[in-house]
Length: 424
Length: 167
Ligand code: SF4
Image (cartoon, rainbow over all chains, first blue to last red; front, side, top):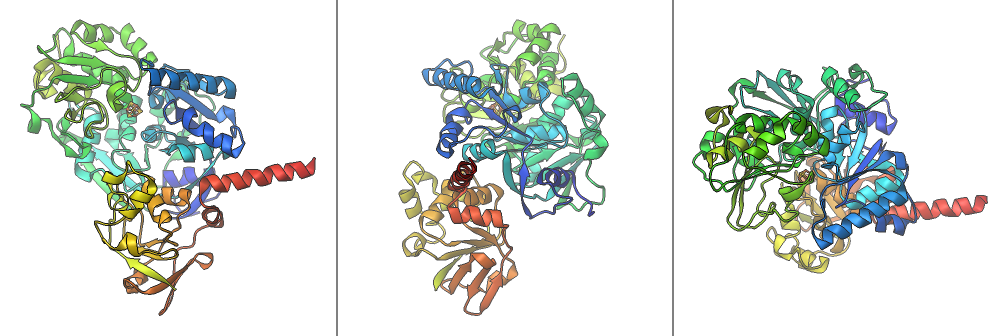
């Protein structure tokens, strides 16, 4: 058999083939389909009706409400009602108001290395952190997946991104991925499969790895894989996944050809900030330092997991927000919020003056009532800062890590977390 | 024979489906398709014509209208050196043939008489056929049916008919 990359191995298995090569078009079985309230039932059901069919396998479909939660607008409430009705009728696994889909899916043990997973959302590459080939599609294609349990794929080339060195204090996966966006651009992934590798990646916790894979979307890749290891298996077992494979079965072959290899060094990395209106505008935080901010946002699937809340609290502990600055925190999932509450992290944030929002997408994509107003400048832990995405067209969004966002909330301007340092 | 419209690398989705017409229907978008690259394209293209392009055709946003506009204009298909991934998926799912060719495509000049021979994965030109990367049968079938949804519609209708016979 020819040597294969991890992406090729997963696709070959899903296609029922011994091997596949980049450029080949194959039909694969789908191990799991994830949909949410926005692109899910309301968009796919009319197509399923037109086709006159039901779900291919209700045990392989997971529905998560997150975009319109908590349903505080009339439209949002109606969409949530429809979503709940559909879940009941179809008897699928449904997590309602439990958090953001990309975080809830693995948290409830649904992902495993070697799976081929299709998500109805553009940040679906997040699942790649678990060694699953997970990618996003639009509602029409999702309806096709739900009807047939299959999808066609053009086997991608693999782009290897290798990290060496050790992250310094107050640096995180978010800084790594922003640095990659800055150097490679939003088209660097060419809709191929990125595989993150190297000692720096191996040393990351599971939730940190999720941040890298999540923003494979911003790098323009179809998937953002990290080969599984003990960290992966232990984390999944702890989160209720069963029948876990041997991680040795889901590694790329060392001699498998890749399209490109990019090298990055964590030893030289400074905290990164991406200026409006593209993640590709990433540069060291010092480049943007005097910029005054009105809102600091810790939220989204990208930047409000337990590790992110913990990082923010480390800076904020015992301090107050700068006058006039609003700190909004929307923890990625209910479970992460509960754990952060148990560990005193939520109290640290609230004592400093943070406003805690529901476990949902919220203003990351401009939903809900906390949207950014005219001319507001925000620094955010989210993945995207396209013009107008989080609110008014005139608002400006800078992207940074939870450390950097927290440091900026304390300073009232974009600030280097290494300079502000840990709180009391 | 039909005509070849030949363009270069990196034709983006803004050129194919210009942002300022996106709020209109597909007729309006199609009428302005590629106008920033070739102002005459939309008015001159005829059903069955073929668009030849370089690398990374359809780069940019995920908007499905980029492929839909070309289909609306009646193109037999696009033949390019390579495609942006999301455009490629959208095109096939909407029933627009997209084929990949090699360096030989360079000999096709604007206005040449050409014909897309889907069954044999070739572009027929006056100077002889150019071989293209073949698409697997199931994608050819999907394209022939007009895209993913009509294709599935047929497939399920067939299944139901078969089940009916068995009973
Ligand atoms: S939090 Fe933001 S990036 Fe994540 S799924 Fe929701 S809208 Fe998308």
